[in-house]
Length: 204
Image 1 (cartoon, rainbow, N blue to C red):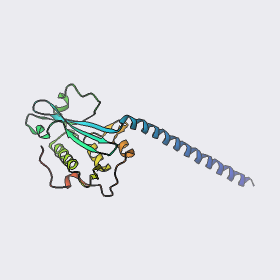
Image 2: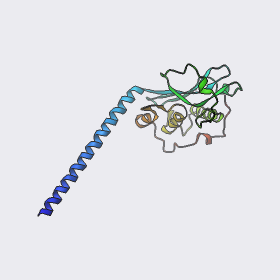
Image 3: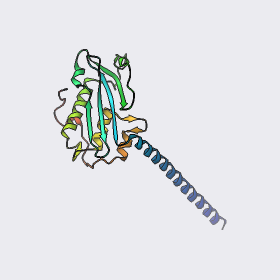
Image 4: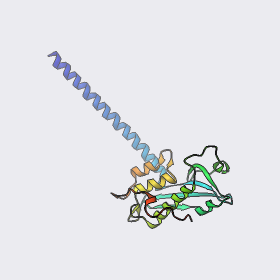
C-alpha cells in the first residue's frame, strides 16, 4: 500500500515537472516571438544594407548594395561605381569586411579601412571578391532559374547575397528575414554561383 502511494506521488511530481517545463518552454518561445516581431517592425518592408569595397583611383569609396522587398521578395544588387574602377593600380581594396545599414553613418576617413595590414584577413576584399559580386549581379539581372521563381528571389539566393554584401546588424539580420518573410518554394534551389556558367566574368 505504501509503495503504491509512493509511486503515485512520484508520478505526480514527474507530471508536474513536465508541465512546468512545457510552460517554461512556451514562455520562452513567446518572449522570443515578441522580440522577433519588434525587430521585424524595425526592419519594415525593406531589408537593405551595403558593403565597403575600397577606394577608386580618385579616393572615392565604392560600395556594393543589397535591397530586398518584403512584398514580392524582389532582390536588387547595385554598385555605387563600376567594380572595374577598383582594378586600377592606384585603387585600394578594403582590408576587411565593412558593412553598414542604409541609415548607419559612414566613416569620415576611409584610410584605416584600406591600409595594408601586417597579417591579411580572410574577409578582405580581393579580385576574387569582385569576381563573385559580378556573378551575383549577373544572376540577379537574368533572373537565374535556381535563384528566382516567377521573378521572386529564393531564400537560398538571398542568403548567398546577404552573406556577401550585408548580413544585417544585431537582431535585425538575414536570419530573421529568412525565418518570417514569404520566399517562393523551390525544391532544387541549391547551387554554386561559380558553376552556373564559365567563371569568372568580365568585371565591368
